[in-house]
Length: 232
Image 1 (cartoon, rainbow, N blue to C red):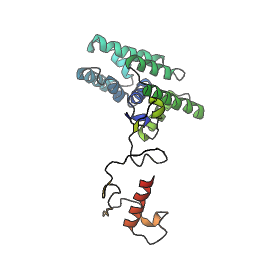
Image 2 (cartoon, helix red, strand yellow):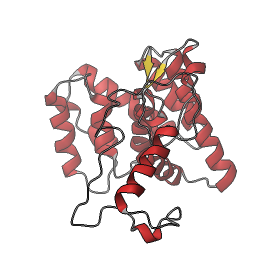
Image 3 (cartoon, rainbow, N blue to C red):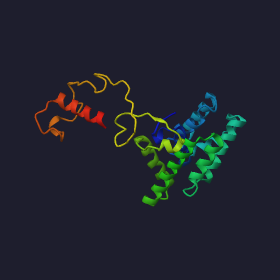
Image 4 (tube, rainbow, N blue to C red):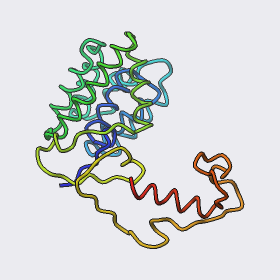
């Protein structure tokens, strides 16, 4: 079984972030709205959402959609109403319950999904314990920064309860330990990568590299760095 080990690469976490942005009415509210509607409704529905969003001034996008009932079918409007109700009832005290409840009612959650949501819940708890900040929008901004950075990992073995293959780059695997590692495309000029000497600056100058204590040239330093990367 394969699973990506990055927390914010998981579908369920992306949807949780989208719900958080929608509830907080952040600058990503349109993108979040369209993500949650993906594979659920037609392009006509999405176009109506975009049209309403363009006409909204300071008004919440969800509320503006509620005021445009005639543009939507019964199922579409019921879905929008459910999200608007969730948004109205959400606060820093129950935001996680609101998001989890919505996701459970719309998805058949796997064991991995549940572990990911628990990890997402831990982010929320740490934020409020450390920063003592009651502002939901600030938490939303914090989560968006984490999602952009995308460095948080999940314990996929614990999540699935069975052996899995974690696919990642050699750079993101630093500091992680595995009993077995498979390196595809391990061949000359691919990995280690062949040395290139472009005319523009693409790397830190040799004299600034801490390990350059001898008279090694650029190519030698490049090979040494690739060797270290391969070892890790």
